[in-house]
Amino acid sequence: MCSDLIASISRSLSLLSTLLLVISYLGILIYISRLSKKYHLFFRIFYMSMIFTRSLPPLVRSIGYFIALFCDYSVPPFVFTALLLAKFFSRAAGFCCIFERTFATFYAKGYENSKRYFFVIICVLVCAGFSGITLAVDADSDFGQKYSSLSYGVFCIVTTTMLFFVNRSLVKKSSASKCNLSERYQLTENIKALRLFLPFSMAISGNSMVLSMSMLLFHIDTVFNFPICQKVPSYAPIFLCIIFTTTIINLAAPLYVFYHNRKTRMLQKIGVAEIRNVLGVNIVGNGMGNDEQYFQHYKTAWA
Image (cartoon, rainbow, N blue to C red):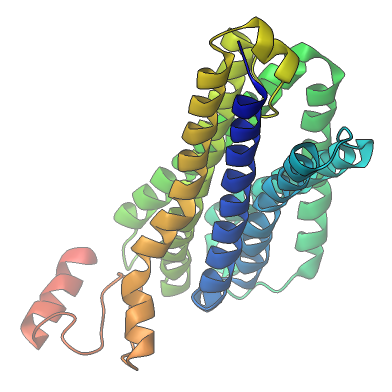
């Protein structure tokens, strides 16, 4: 049987996991804000918005867990409304990142110096519409709740992966006669930007898959249900396993971004500049060893 102690432990772990996610996302937001200046302004806006809005759902959940754990009354309705709004902004920001990099891929020639802010407005409106549709399906029925998040996660990982390989293919096929420096630079930036976004896309997909499977197979949501726990003996261990799995998945994205960019941050701290050309080669210090090796790399890349 599910005792009050098990319920308190489960809710406490849920509260700690959500607070840990909030701290990690806000921490990586501060960290990325110092590294993202080399990317296009539009990508910086959408990417940092995506990270910030990703911290909103666990923040709202932590408030609900705190009320359920330390207060004698049930979670008020405004928490569920706030959670719905947090999901809306989070999904809209994710759509914006994908839409912006898609535009930067197919219009790479002139996108580097593009400062057309009406694009941001159009992008936000379109992505807000998509996000609203997914949440409407999510809230419409039990079927929508199970499959809407899963569809969103699969869409993010598939489109991001496709964009990554499309840009890599375009960089490999480009040459001095077919592609100018501006276009090649933009394609290279697209690859770097997608490497920053891909971990979060994978986390979104993995998290949605785990939650959808938990609701479909075990009828377990992220909110601990004490009455069901009393009826089903396996509810508590499965619930804790799901909380642990989703926490690891969501923490993996900011940790990977931090690890992947640690070298750049270390060079900034010690005052060593690392400047890379459109081929991705470090042209400062001992990036290529000697002049002969440096120009041989150019000859091979632009052949």
